[in-house]
Picture (cartoon, rainbow, N blue to C red):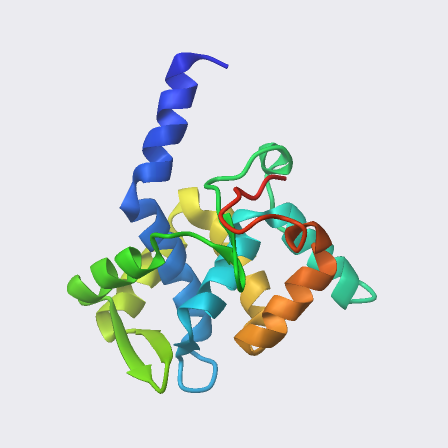
Length: 184
């Protein structure tokens, strides 16, 4: 692998805008469900895990449905992930979620509020417009299609039920140490 490719991958991993776009697409899919709110950053992270690790999402669909739909995924995604996550107490995690949500709130694209001990996140009207624009871009077509699949498959589940399902279909996560990077 050339140094240029490695440098490009590192730059993409560190680009907040890419991660923010992915979260906007996820929140867009949830906007029409219930009150349009994702109840908990941890639930959002679990849904994002399925986007970032499509092989594990494919495994989840095979475990959940008799006739699972094909996961929208490029061939290179079978060997690599767009950005890594770590093993956390309650499942896959990325330390930057609070940062990304804060940036999206500051840009007026999402609302965030706490009820009890749970952080709730939902798109604003402006956020819906921006997410719709991202969804129309050719570069995000596969990711948007997979976001629709993730939302349909697990979007109505509670964070706890989703954690249990992920641990059942990706049991290797339970054997990892907290803070360890999740591999394919």
